[in-house]
Length: 301
Image 1: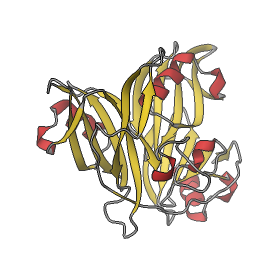
Image 2: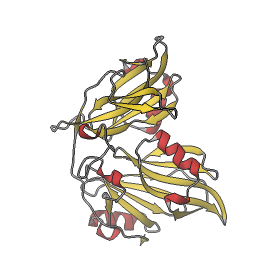
Image 3: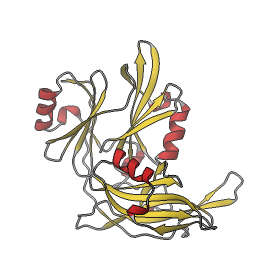
Image 4: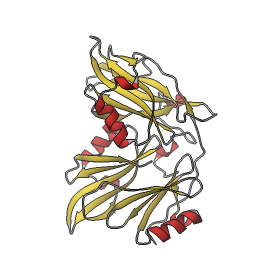
């Protein structure tokens, strides 16, 4: 097992959240068009980060709503098949907490929102009227609803881009180092991250890109082959990605945190890109083609 990079270590404290909900017509934040005319409002769904936690600190999902729209609670059976298929494929083992249909002023359905627990963390996902994925809703703590969306020491404090969740590869727990050395000795370790529940995600390369997950005790949880075209993977800076990559990520994962990017090459020819991100404490690997067009996303943990 080879170590390629060492980064500073930091610990996350566990935090949990309680669910409530508000009308889509409630204005917590207003969004302006390029002309300065108010065309939409941002309302909140207060959601829970844990269905089982005793601590009930609240966080809020931010959903942009068209003027006159309404969000109505529905049952899981009322969601389009495309929504449930998407959730099953991208959030295996999820638990549905809340579901909503979005209606316009003429009472026509314009979209859906599903709030699920994935690895006991909340994820809010918005879909169009046909059930096609639109975006993962940004989460904020109550005090940050009208601000930048994070505060120092808060649940989303890694949005300052200072890598507070990174762990030195040399400081990985002994059981983790032993497991990786015994089972994936040919891997080149790239970076490690610690989650709020003290689980670990390790990025590595070995004729492909991989994410290996361990729980808080250092026990192996799963290993995922990250989506990528065939070819060698090289680390690149975020600024080196095509502009289309940032455009897609900003629209689909509002206020996401960039973690790592790779360019995939066949010889000297660029075949595509893979970007590792954190969106509200859930980590994703997102693949793009050579021009920066979205191809596929994989939910890691």
